[in-house]
Length: 428
Image 1 (cartoon, rainbow, N blue to C red):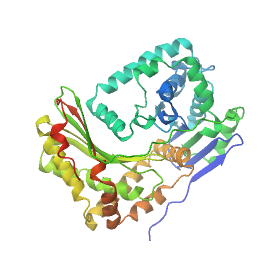
Image 2 (cartoon, one colour; image 1 turned 180 degrees about the horizontal axis):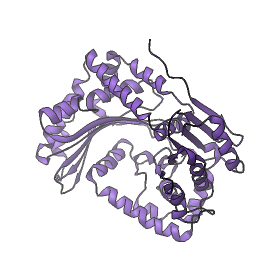
Image 3 (cartoon, rainbow, N blue to C red; image 1 turned 90 degrees about the vertical axis):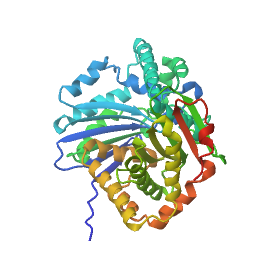
Image 4 (cartoon, rainbow, N blue to C red; image 1 turned 180 degrees about the vertical axis):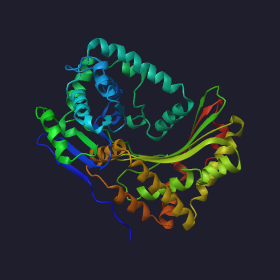
Protein backbone atom coordinates (compact mmCIF):
# COMPACT_ATOMS: atom_id res chain seq x y z
CA UNK A 1 0.00 0.00 0.00
CA UNK A 2 1.31 3.43 -0.93
CA UNK A 3 2.26 5.52 2.10
CA UNK A 4 0.79 9.01 1.99
CA UNK A 5 2.89 11.86 3.31
CA UNK A 6 1.15 13.66 6.19
CA UNK A 7 -0.36 17.07 5.50
CA UNK A 8 2.01 19.71 6.83
CA UNK A 9 0.38 22.73 5.21
CA UNK A 10 -1.56 25.19 7.35
CA UNK A 11 -3.44 28.38 6.51
CA UNK A 12 -4.78 31.30 8.49
CA UNK A 13 -6.76 34.27 7.16
CA UNK A 14 -6.08 37.36 9.26
CA UNK A 15 -8.77 39.90 10.11
CA UNK A 16 -7.64 42.22 7.29
CA UNK A 17 -7.98 39.42 4.71
CA UNK A 18 -4.29 38.55 4.40
CA UNK A 19 -3.76 34.82 3.84
CA UNK A 20 -0.79 33.25 5.65
CA UNK A 21 0.39 29.76 4.71
CA UNK A 22 3.09 27.64 6.29
CA UNK A 23 4.64 24.40 5.07
CA UNK A 24 6.57 22.42 7.66
CA UNK A 25 9.78 20.80 6.42
CA UNK A 26 11.48 19.23 9.46
CA UNK A 27 15.24 19.08 9.11
CA UNK A 28 15.48 21.80 6.45
CA UNK A 29 18.30 24.23 7.08
CA UNK A 30 16.75 27.04 5.04
CA UNK A 31 13.48 28.91 5.23
CA UNK A 32 11.85 30.58 2.25
CA UNK A 33 9.32 33.40 2.32
CA UNK A 34 7.22 34.02 -0.80
CA UNK A 35 4.77 36.89 -1.13
CA UNK A 36 2.24 36.73 -3.96
CA UNK A 37 0.18 39.70 -5.12
CA UNK A 38 -2.78 39.75 -7.51
CA UNK A 39 -1.09 42.08 -9.97
CA UNK A 40 0.11 41.27 -13.47
CA UNK A 41 -0.37 42.06 -17.12
CA UNK A 42 -3.93 40.68 -17.09
CA UNK A 43 -4.88 43.48 -14.71
CA UNK A 44 -3.69 46.24 -17.07
CA UNK A 45 -5.38 48.18 -19.84
CA UNK A 46 -3.35 49.36 -22.83
CA UNK A 47 -2.37 52.67 -21.22
CA UNK A 48 -0.98 50.83 -18.18
CA UNK A 49 0.73 47.99 -20.04
CA UNK A 50 3.83 46.99 -18.10
CA UNK A 51 2.95 48.79 -14.87
CA UNK A 52 2.92 45.61 -12.74
CA UNK A 53 6.44 44.75 -13.88
CA UNK A 54 7.64 48.35 -13.50
CA UNK A 55 6.26 48.44 -9.95
CA UNK A 56 7.97 45.17 -9.08
CA UNK A 57 11.30 46.76 -10.04
CA UNK A 58 10.58 49.83 -7.93
CA UNK A 59 9.90 47.85 -4.76
CA UNK A 60 13.55 46.78 -4.79
CA UNK A 61 14.72 50.43 -5.01
CA UNK A 62 14.05 51.34 -1.41
CA UNK A 63 11.49 51.89 1.33
CA UNK A 64 11.08 54.66 3.87
CA UNK A 65 13.00 52.55 6.41
CA UNK A 66 15.53 51.32 3.84
CA UNK A 67 15.80 54.16 1.32
CA UNK A 68 18.14 52.52 -1.21
CA UNK A 69 18.43 49.29 -3.16
CA UNK A 70 21.61 48.38 -1.26
CA UNK A 71 19.74 48.65 2.03
CA UNK A 72 17.20 46.17 0.63
CA UNK A 73 19.71 43.62 -0.64
CA UNK A 74 22.51 43.94 1.92
CA UNK A 75 20.68 42.56 5.00
CA UNK A 76 19.86 39.41 3.05
CA UNK A 77 23.18 38.93 1.29
CA UNK A 78 25.25 39.52 4.44
CA UNK A 79 23.78 36.29 5.85
CA UNK A 80 24.17 34.38 2.56
CA UNK A 81 20.54 34.69 1.53
CA UNK A 82 18.94 35.32 -1.84
CA UNK A 83 16.02 37.51 -2.82
CA UNK A 84 14.27 38.41 -6.05
CA UNK A 85 10.92 39.07 -7.66
CA UNK A 86 9.01 38.25 -10.81
CA UNK A 87 5.96 39.47 -12.68
CA UNK A 88 3.70 37.28 -14.78
CA UNK A 89 0.29 37.63 -16.35
CA UNK A 90 -1.70 36.71 -13.26
CA UNK A 91 0.53 37.53 -10.30
CA UNK A 92 3.61 39.29 -9.01
CA UNK A 93 5.89 37.45 -6.59
CA UNK A 94 8.64 38.41 -4.18
CA UNK A 95 10.77 35.80 -2.45
CA UNK A 96 13.64 35.42 -0.05
CA UNK A 97 15.55 32.30 0.98
CA UNK A 98 17.81 32.37 4.03
CA UNK A 99 19.24 30.05 6.65
CA UNK A 100 16.55 29.32 9.25
CA UNK A 101 17.92 31.62 12.00
CA UNK A 102 17.38 34.64 9.72
CA UNK A 103 13.69 34.05 9.00
CA UNK A 104 12.54 37.21 10.82
CA UNK A 105 15.03 39.35 8.92
CA UNK A 106 13.85 37.99 5.55
CA UNK A 107 10.19 38.48 6.45
CA UNK A 108 10.81 42.02 7.66
CA UNK A 109 12.62 43.05 4.47
CA UNK A 110 9.96 41.59 2.14
CA UNK A 111 7.01 43.02 4.05
CA UNK A 112 8.70 46.40 4.23
CA UNK A 113 9.04 46.33 0.44
CA UNK A 114 5.44 45.38 -0.33
CA UNK A 115 3.95 47.72 2.28
CA UNK A 116 6.02 50.89 2.19
CA UNK A 117 8.02 51.43 -1.03
CA UNK A 118 9.66 54.82 -1.41
CA UNK A 119 9.27 55.16 -5.18
CA UNK A 120 11.68 58.07 -5.32
CA UNK A 121 10.97 60.14 -8.48
CA UNK A 122 14.61 60.04 -9.58
CA UNK A 123 14.70 56.25 -9.18
CA UNK A 124 11.45 55.94 -11.14
CA UNK A 125 13.02 57.75 -14.10
CA UNK A 126 16.27 55.82 -13.82
CA UNK A 127 14.45 52.48 -13.76
CA UNK A 128 12.35 53.45 -16.79
CA UNK A 129 15.51 53.24 -18.88
CA UNK A 130 16.49 49.94 -17.26
CA UNK A 131 13.13 48.38 -18.14
CA UNK A 132 13.25 49.63 -21.71
CA UNK A 133 16.68 48.04 -22.06
CA UNK A 134 15.27 44.83 -20.61
CA UNK A 135 12.60 44.89 -23.32
CA UNK A 136 15.29 45.52 -25.96
CA UNK A 137 17.34 42.60 -24.66
CA UNK A 138 14.35 40.25 -24.68
CA UNK A 139 13.46 41.12 -28.25
CA UNK A 140 17.03 40.42 -29.32
CA UNK A 141 16.50 36.73 -28.50
CA UNK A 142 14.75 35.09 -31.47
CA UNK A 143 13.24 32.33 -29.32
CA UNK A 144 11.71 34.90 -26.95
CA UNK A 145 10.46 36.93 -29.89
CA UNK A 146 8.80 33.79 -31.27
CA UNK A 147 7.02 33.32 -27.94
CA UNK A 148 5.73 36.89 -28.00
CA UNK A 149 4.44 36.51 -31.54
CA UNK A 150 2.70 33.27 -30.59
CA UNK A 151 1.00 34.92 -27.61
CA UNK A 152 -0.31 37.58 -29.96
CA UNK A 153 -1.68 34.87 -32.28
CA UNK A 154 -3.34 32.90 -29.50
CA UNK A 155 -4.79 35.94 -27.70
CA UNK A 156 -4.93 38.83 -30.21
CA UNK A 157 -5.62 42.42 -29.13
CA UNK A 158 -5.94 41.71 -25.41
CA UNK A 159 -3.74 41.70 -22.29
CA UNK A 160 -3.06 37.94 -22.44
CA UNK A 161 -1.36 38.45 -25.79
CA UNK A 162 0.94 41.26 -24.65
CA UNK A 163 4.48 41.15 -23.33
CA UNK A 164 4.27 41.21 -19.53
CA UNK A 165 6.75 44.10 -19.55
CA UNK A 166 4.58 46.16 -21.91
CA UNK A 167 6.17 48.08 -24.76
CA UNK A 168 8.80 50.81 -24.79
CA UNK A 169 6.03 53.29 -25.61
CA UNK A 170 3.69 52.17 -22.82
CA UNK A 171 6.51 52.15 -20.27
CA UNK A 172 7.45 55.66 -21.35
CA UNK A 173 3.90 56.77 -20.57
CA UNK A 174 3.74 55.36 -17.02
CA UNK A 175 4.09 58.13 -14.44
CA UNK A 176 5.00 57.83 -10.78
CA UNK A 177 1.46 58.91 -9.90
CA UNK A 178 0.02 56.07 -11.99
CA UNK A 179 2.32 53.64 -10.23
CA UNK A 180 1.43 54.88 -6.74
CA UNK A 181 -2.28 54.63 -7.56
CA UNK A 182 -1.88 51.10 -8.93
CA UNK A 183 0.16 50.09 -5.87
CA UNK A 184 -2.49 51.31 -3.41
CA UNK A 185 -5.22 49.58 -5.42
CA UNK A 186 -3.62 46.14 -5.87
CA UNK A 187 -1.27 45.78 -2.90
CA UNK A 188 -3.97 45.34 -0.28
CA UNK A 189 -4.11 42.46 2.25
CA UNK A 190 -7.05 40.62 0.67
CA UNK A 191 -5.07 40.47 -2.59
CA UNK A 192 -1.88 39.11 -1.01
CA UNK A 193 -0.68 35.68 0.13
CA UNK A 194 2.37 35.07 2.34
CA UNK A 195 3.74 31.54 2.07
CA UNK A 196 6.58 30.25 4.26
CA UNK A 197 8.36 26.89 4.04
CA UNK A 198 11.05 25.46 6.27
CA UNK A 199 11.66 23.89 9.67
CA UNK A 200 9.29 26.33 11.33
CA UNK A 201 5.84 26.00 12.90
CA UNK A 202 2.67 27.72 11.78
CA UNK A 203 2.47 29.42 15.16
CA UNK A 204 5.95 30.88 14.75
CA UNK A 205 5.03 32.20 11.31
CA UNK A 206 1.82 33.83 12.57
CA UNK A 207 3.59 35.29 15.59
CA UNK A 208 6.11 36.94 13.26
CA UNK A 209 3.69 38.09 10.56
CA UNK A 210 0.78 39.46 12.62
CA UNK A 211 2.46 42.51 14.22
CA UNK A 212 4.06 43.49 10.91
CA UNK A 213 0.73 43.68 9.05
CA UNK A 214 -1.84 44.79 11.64
CA UNK A 215 -1.85 48.38 10.34
CA UNK A 216 -2.09 47.37 6.67
CA UNK A 217 -5.18 49.19 5.31
CA UNK A 218 -7.79 47.15 3.49
CA UNK A 219 -9.02 47.86 -0.04
CA UNK A 220 -10.78 46.45 -3.08
CA UNK A 221 -8.37 45.53 -5.90
CA UNK A 222 -9.19 45.75 -9.59
CA UNK A 223 -10.15 42.53 -11.36
CA UNK A 224 -8.22 40.86 -14.16
CA UNK A 225 -9.32 40.97 -17.81
CA UNK A 226 -10.86 37.70 -19.08
CA UNK A 227 -9.84 36.38 -22.48
CA UNK A 228 -11.96 37.13 -25.52
CA UNK A 229 -13.86 34.25 -27.09
CA UNK A 230 -11.69 32.07 -29.31
CA UNK A 231 -13.10 32.07 -32.86
CA UNK A 232 -10.16 30.60 -34.78
CA UNK A 233 -11.27 28.14 -37.47
CA UNK A 234 -8.26 28.07 -39.82
CA UNK A 235 -4.59 27.30 -39.26
CA UNK A 236 -2.38 30.41 -39.20
CA UNK A 237 1.29 31.17 -39.90
CA UNK A 238 3.30 34.20 -38.87
CA UNK A 239 6.87 34.75 -40.04
CA UNK A 240 9.28 37.42 -38.82
CA UNK A 241 12.47 37.97 -40.75
CA UNK A 242 15.70 37.69 -38.76
CA UNK A 243 19.12 37.04 -40.21
CA UNK A 244 19.80 34.12 -37.88
CA UNK A 245 21.74 30.88 -38.06
CA UNK A 246 18.68 28.99 -36.81
CA UNK A 247 15.00 29.08 -37.61
CA UNK A 248 13.03 29.28 -34.37
CA UNK A 249 9.75 27.41 -34.69
CA UNK A 250 6.74 27.42 -32.40
CA UNK A 251 3.74 25.22 -33.09
CA UNK A 252 0.84 25.98 -30.74
CA UNK A 253 -2.85 25.39 -30.14
CA UNK A 254 -5.27 26.87 -27.61
CA UNK A 255 -5.26 24.93 -24.34
CA UNK A 256 -7.39 24.76 -21.23
CA UNK A 257 -7.64 26.49 -17.86
CA UNK A 258 -6.12 25.36 -14.60
CA UNK A 259 -9.60 24.30 -13.42
CA UNK A 260 -10.49 22.16 -16.44
CA UNK A 261 -11.06 18.45 -15.72
CA UNK A 262 -8.84 17.54 -18.69
CA UNK A 263 -5.86 19.44 -17.30
CA UNK A 264 -3.81 16.47 -16.13
CA UNK A 265 -4.58 14.37 -19.18
CA UNK A 266 -3.35 17.21 -21.41
CA UNK A 267 -0.24 17.58 -19.25
CA UNK A 268 0.57 13.89 -19.67
CA UNK A 269 -0.05 14.11 -23.41
CA UNK A 270 2.56 16.89 -23.48
CA UNK A 271 4.96 14.74 -21.45
CA UNK A 272 4.57 11.86 -23.90
CA UNK A 273 5.21 14.19 -26.82
CA UNK A 274 8.00 16.45 -25.74
CA UNK A 275 9.14 16.43 -22.13
CA UNK A 276 12.35 14.56 -21.44
CA UNK A 277 14.96 12.80 -23.57
CA UNK A 278 12.77 9.73 -24.10
CA UNK A 279 9.78 11.73 -25.37
CA UNK A 280 8.49 11.17 -28.89
CA UNK A 281 9.55 14.55 -30.25
CA UNK A 282 13.05 14.38 -28.76
CA UNK A 283 13.64 10.87 -30.10
CA UNK A 284 12.22 11.54 -33.55
CA UNK A 285 13.42 15.09 -34.20
CA UNK A 286 16.82 15.02 -32.47
CA UNK A 287 17.94 11.43 -32.05
CA UNK A 288 16.66 9.85 -35.27
CA UNK A 289 16.74 12.77 -37.71
CA UNK A 290 19.31 15.12 -36.17
CA UNK A 291 17.19 18.18 -36.96
CA UNK A 292 17.43 20.09 -33.68
CA UNK A 293 19.52 20.44 -30.57
CA UNK A 294 16.57 21.69 -28.52
CA UNK A 295 12.99 20.54 -28.85
CA UNK A 296 10.31 20.36 -26.22
CA UNK A 297 6.58 20.76 -25.62
CA UNK A 298 4.65 22.29 -22.76
CA UNK A 299 1.07 22.76 -21.60
CA UNK A 300 0.35 26.02 -19.78
CA UNK A 301 -2.78 26.77 -17.77
CA UNK A 302 -4.26 30.08 -16.65
CA UNK A 303 -7.49 31.00 -14.87
CA UNK A 304 -9.66 30.89 -17.98
CA UNK A 305 -7.42 29.76 -20.83
CA UNK A 306 -4.23 27.92 -21.69
CA UNK A 307 -1.97 26.76 -24.48
CA UNK A 308 -0.11 23.75 -25.80
CA UNK A 309 3.21 24.64 -27.45
CA UNK A 310 6.06 22.86 -29.20
CA UNK A 311 9.37 24.71 -29.69
CA UNK A 312 12.43 23.78 -31.71
CA UNK A 313 15.41 25.55 -33.28
CA UNK A 314 16.62 24.15 -36.62
CA UNK A 315 18.77 24.84 -39.67
CA UNK A 316 16.70 27.22 -41.85
CA UNK A 317 17.06 24.86 -44.82
CA UNK A 318 15.43 22.08 -42.78
CA UNK A 319 12.61 24.10 -41.22
CA UNK A 320 9.84 22.71 -43.44
CA UNK A 321 11.03 19.18 -42.78
CA UNK A 322 11.07 19.89 -39.03
CA UNK A 323 7.51 21.27 -39.11
CA UNK A 324 6.32 18.19 -41.00
CA UNK A 325 8.03 15.94 -38.46
CA UNK A 326 6.52 17.75 -35.47
CA UNK A 327 3.03 17.69 -36.96
CA UNK A 328 3.45 13.99 -37.73
CA UNK A 329 4.09 13.33 -34.04
CA UNK A 330 1.04 15.39 -33.09
CA UNK A 331 -1.05 13.25 -35.41
CA UNK A 332 0.51 10.09 -34.01
CA UNK A 333 -0.45 10.82 -30.39
CA UNK A 334 -4.12 10.85 -31.39
CA UNK A 335 -3.91 7.06 -31.55
CA UNK A 336 -3.88 5.08 -28.30
CA UNK A 337 -0.59 5.55 -26.44
CA UNK A 338 0.82 2.19 -25.28
CA UNK A 339 0.36 1.53 -21.57
CA UNK A 340 4.10 1.23 -20.87
CA UNK A 341 4.79 4.58 -22.57
CA UNK A 342 2.01 6.21 -20.56
CA UNK A 343 3.42 4.82 -17.31
CA UNK A 344 6.87 6.21 -18.12
CA UNK A 345 5.38 9.64 -18.79
CA UNK A 346 3.40 9.60 -15.54
CA UNK A 347 6.48 8.46 -13.65
CA UNK A 348 8.52 11.33 -15.10
CA UNK A 349 5.87 13.90 -14.21
CA UNK A 350 5.44 12.65 -10.64
CA UNK A 351 9.13 12.13 -10.03
CA UNK A 352 10.13 15.61 -11.14
CA UNK A 353 7.40 17.11 -8.98
CA UNK A 354 8.64 15.21 -5.93
CA UNK A 355 12.25 16.18 -6.56
CA UNK A 356 11.30 19.87 -6.74
CA UNK A 357 9.68 19.64 -3.34
CA UNK A 358 13.03 19.16 -1.60
CA UNK A 359 13.65 22.90 -1.89
CA UNK A 360 12.01 25.28 0.58
CA UNK A 361 11.52 27.95 -2.04
CA UNK A 362 9.73 25.53 -4.38
CA UNK A 363 7.46 24.38 -1.55
CA UNK A 364 6.61 27.95 -0.49
CA UNK A 365 5.92 28.87 -4.12
CA UNK A 366 3.78 25.76 -4.62
CA UNK A 367 1.39 26.79 -1.87
CA UNK A 368 1.44 30.54 -2.34
CA UNK A 369 0.73 30.58 -6.07
CA UNK A 370 -2.11 28.05 -5.80
CA UNK A 371 -3.72 29.94 -2.93
CA UNK A 372 -3.64 33.24 -4.82
CA UNK A 373 -4.84 31.86 -8.15
CA UNK A 374 -7.15 29.02 -7.04
CA UNK A 375 -8.07 29.86 -3.43
CA UNK A 376 -7.12 26.25 -2.77
CA UNK A 377 -3.86 24.37 -2.32
CA UNK A 378 -3.63 20.84 -3.67
CA UNK A 379 -1.02 18.74 -1.92
CA UNK A 380 1.72 16.99 -3.86
CA UNK A 381 0.02 13.67 -3.11
CA UNK A 382 -3.30 14.94 -4.48
CA UNK A 383 -1.67 16.07 -7.72
CA UNK A 384 0.26 12.80 -7.98
CA UNK A 385 -3.02 10.91 -7.61
CA UNK A 386 -4.59 12.96 -10.40
CA UNK A 387 -1.63 12.16 -12.65
CA UNK A 388 -1.83 8.47 -11.75
CA UNK A 389 -5.52 8.42 -12.68
CA UNK A 390 -4.87 9.45 -16.32
CA UNK A 391 -5.59 6.56 -18.71
CA UNK A 392 -4.55 5.78 -22.27
CA UNK A 393 -8.12 6.60 -23.29
CA UNK A 394 -7.86 10.01 -21.62
CA UNK A 395 -4.69 10.88 -23.53
CA UNK A 396 -6.17 9.82 -26.86
CA UNK A 397 -9.35 11.77 -26.15
CA UNK A 398 -7.63 15.05 -25.26
CA UNK A 399 -5.29 14.68 -28.23
CA UNK A 400 -8.26 14.40 -30.56
CA UNK A 401 -10.24 17.11 -28.77
CA UNK A 402 -7.50 19.75 -28.61
CA UNK A 403 -5.09 19.04 -31.47
CA UNK A 404 -7.57 20.42 -33.98
CA UNK A 405 -6.29 21.37 -37.48
CA UNK A 406 -8.30 24.60 -37.68
CA UNK A 407 -6.80 25.91 -34.43
CA UNK A 408 -3.17 25.26 -35.31
CA UNK A 409 -0.71 28.18 -35.16
CA UNK A 410 2.86 28.35 -36.41
CA UNK A 411 5.41 31.09 -35.71
CA UNK A 412 8.74 31.15 -37.53
CA UNK A 413 11.50 33.62 -36.67
CA UNK A 414 14.39 33.32 -39.08
CA UNK A 415 15.68 34.21 -42.55
CA UNK A 416 12.35 34.09 -44.39
CA UNK A 417 10.37 36.86 -46.05
CA UNK A 418 7.13 34.92 -46.35
CA UNK A 419 5.21 32.10 -44.69
CA UNK A 420 3.89 30.59 -47.90
CA UNK A 421 6.22 27.59 -47.75
CA UNK A 422 4.81 26.65 -44.33
CA UNK A 423 1.09 27.28 -44.78
CA UNK A 424 0.45 24.15 -46.82
CA UNK A 425 2.05 21.96 -44.13
CA UNK A 426 -0.39 22.83 -41.37
CA UNK A 427 -2.61 19.93 -40.51
CA UNK A 428 -2.81 17.56 -37.60
